[in-house]
Every structure is written in structure tokens, then in C-alpha cells.
Image (cartoon, rainbow, N blue to C red):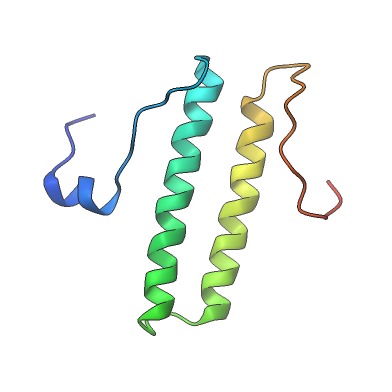
Length: 90
């Protein structure tokens, strides 16, 4: 992947991973950072009246479900660190 441009880095900032290293944890950290960046952009679009609150909610909810799925797929078998539930049936 080519180095990020100044604008790309500004719009999608990332930081390095400091936790215990596994490929799954590193990938989930990247997914989590992308989720946080996109939520911030959606909030800004909604605040600026570019999208409705309902549109922002639907997109954030869809991204949250993908993030939860990636967590399950990247978690090592028998992993005991379960993500907190959001009150919904799995």
C-alpha cells in the first residue's frame, strides 16, 4: 500500500497498535479505528445537514454489526475475552 497523502492521513488518521500482538488483534484494531473514523464522518455529515439522523443511524448500525462480526471471526478459538453485548440476542 502506498504511503498516505497528507489529506488522506487527515481524513483517516490511524495510530499504531500497542496491545499483545496477534494477527487477529492487529486486524481488529485496524477495523476498530476505521469504524471510529467513519462514525466521526457520519456524525459530521449529520450535523451539517448533509444526511438525516436516520440515515446516519442506519449506516452506523450496519457498520457496528460488521465490526462485531469481524471481532468474532478474528477472535482465537476458545478466546475468553468476549466483547460486551448490546442487549440483543446473538
